[in-house]
Image (cartoon, rainbow, N blue to C red; front, side, top):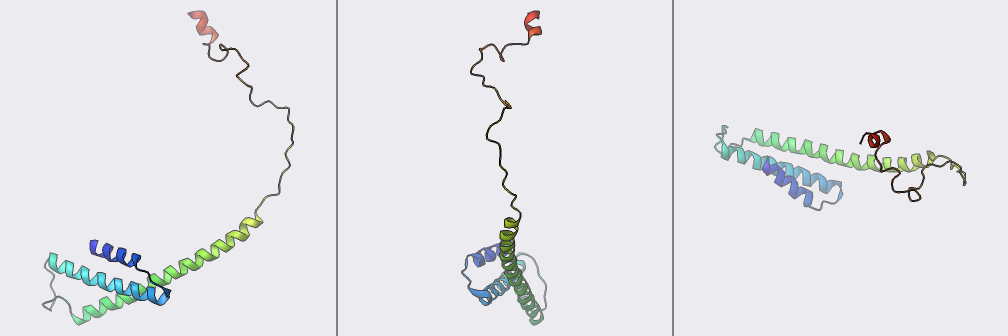
Length: 137
């Protein structure tokens, strides 16, 4: 997993231009990651194949085909994500414009007192103990 993470980090840092460049980069990275992963498995545990190196032509073809198929799938999903993101940004602009409520005119004067100033009161007003507690003491 560490080998695959390193290859993925290196690929993400590479400046790939265009869809063809991205496709080649992803397929190349998948191929390298699979090859290094296979070599890591061969070095760490007994890995039995018919060949001394552990790579048969059939297995190499299967790995290459998997890398191409997955590379096409990954780059297609990345491209479709960018298209969907762009469409949703445009839809959001038109949807937000249509959903604005009409402006309300608020009255400028009101007679309702919501909060009274505590600066005009004496210091014993709200900080004193309740009357029943004061009478008991």
